[in-house]
Amino acid sequence: MTETNGTEGAETAESSESTETAEPTDRRKLGLAMMAKVYGWDVHEGPGDFFSMTVEHLFGEVWTRERLSFRDRRLLLIGLLVGQGLDDVLGLQLEAALGNGEIDDDELREIVIFLTHYAGWPRGAKLNSAAETLIGRRAAAAEHPPPRPDPVD
Image (cartoon, rainbow, N blue to C red; front, side, top):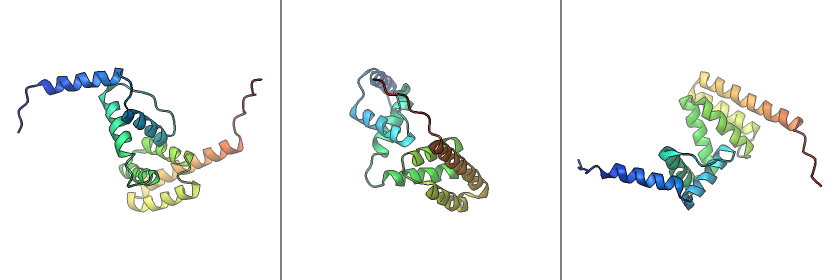
């Protein structure tokens, strides 16, 4: 066991404060851009060390590694979320995957069938319901798009 003199916590707190007020680093900018791609909407700065670690490490380093494709990562994450029953985050991931064109409606339906056999029927049924609701909502939006604003002359 290593002894410490108690200065490590102060050093960490000091560095996190400067991170929140300083210009974003390249890794932070990369992480924010990747986080926006993963979730399908613009992501803005957030406070605290947890947000910093999420953006800079998870999205700035892990999601940007080259060995797996973005789609591979998305599919792995979807499987994990189904397996753990994390339906709220799952809905965000499914919507982003469809919205970004990473999967289409038929692939989503195939994912439901496949994961049902590994995650169990109750979770599969919830996933199917979420998938069909999302597919139906997207189809309705495509049939009745919101009106475009008049161009400004």
